[in-house]
Amino acid sequence: MWYEFCSMTNGKGDTPRPISVDSRTYENNWERTFGTKKKKFDQKVQALQADIDKVREMLDHYSGLPSTASYDNNNESI
Image (tube, rainbow, N blue to C red; front, top):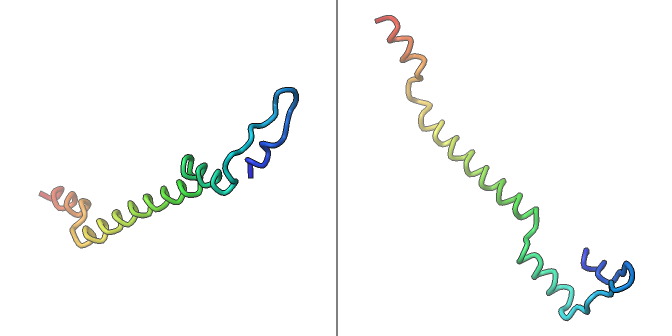
């Protein structure tokens, strides 16, 4: 993981601070604070899927009603 690179130094004064928690706790805290892109992506996909389902339900509900095209055609002949 990225925290493994903390032990690398780039020159004078770049000595890393000692880590006072174990790596698992550190990783869990990181995930809790910042989350992951995959979680956010999955949440967005679920929200979009719910919207698509709502639209499909509305289309199924209104599919038995006459279309506006047939209404417009009937009014032209009057």
